[in-house]
Length: 133
Image (tube, rainbow, N blue to C red; front, side, top):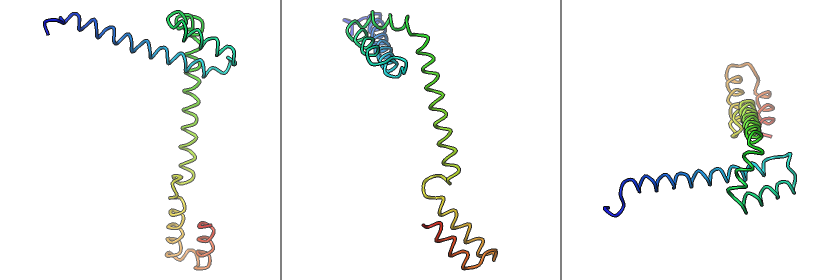
C-alpha cells in the first residue's frame, strides 16, 4: 500500500468517474441522434460518423449545435411515455385489471344478484353465457 499513496487513489477515482461520465454522454448523444425525427438518414449518418470517428470533437460540436433541442426531445419523450402510461392505467381500470379478473368480477356480481332474487335463473344463465363467450 506504500507504493500507491492516497492522493493517487483520489486521482484514479476522479479519472474513472470522468471516464464513466464520458461514456454516459456519448451514449446519450447517440440515442438522441436516433430519436430525432427531424434528422433524416444522411444527417443521422453524418452526426454518427462524426461522433464515433472523432469522439471528443464530435460530442462537443453536437452539444453546442443541438444541445437545446436535446432537452426538448427529452421532454417530448417524457410526455409521450407519461401519456402512454396514463392510457394504459385507464384502460386497465375500465377493463377490470386486464388480467382476466373482469369476467370473474362480473360472474360474482351476477351470482349476488341471483342470490338476492333480483334476476331469475334464466337471466343469470344468459348473462353468464354472454360473459363466458
